[in-house]
Image 1 (tube, rainbow, N blue to C red):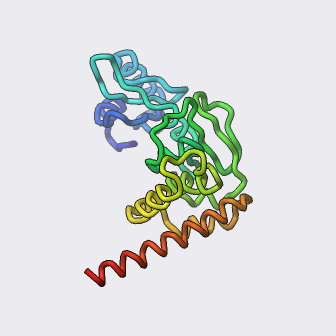
Image 2: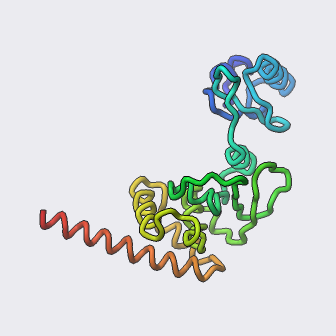
Image 3: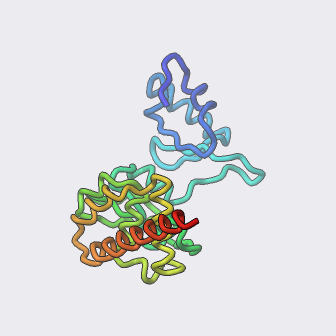
Length: 212
């Protein structure tokens, strides 16, 4: 967000609606950035999230839109080794219509204590730090959550995984390396099953194309 030769106020004006704003990333001195953010907040252009962190919501007749608790948590925790679990994981892959009362996230490393509105669980597998948000969501479901959470069962999970791979949101090799380091036997067994089913799907699709 830092722009050489630009003032904090002008930079804020160019920030797209629906974006988080960090005071330390604005141009100019800390005092100038803090002053610009304070003015924007008082004018109703920014929502204060926590010290040094704001959100530029979309203006509606009811006021500014607010970010979800999950979005705030991800912004605070960062993207490295962070991903959803439970219903939050299923929603990330479009596998449930249920909205969890309390979003659940996992983090590979220390669990912070100052992220309100979400449940954060620790995972010891540091290979997760190489995974994307969607890849962690799939990994969490493979640990066994899919059985009670995924609407449509295993077949729906396979279809969602195939779609995510096609779209480049899931990298099978990276996921395989992380699964191998998981303590969960269920995750390894489910991943082996998933790999076989995806391979069978590709073979069937290839035969269908050849016979068409």
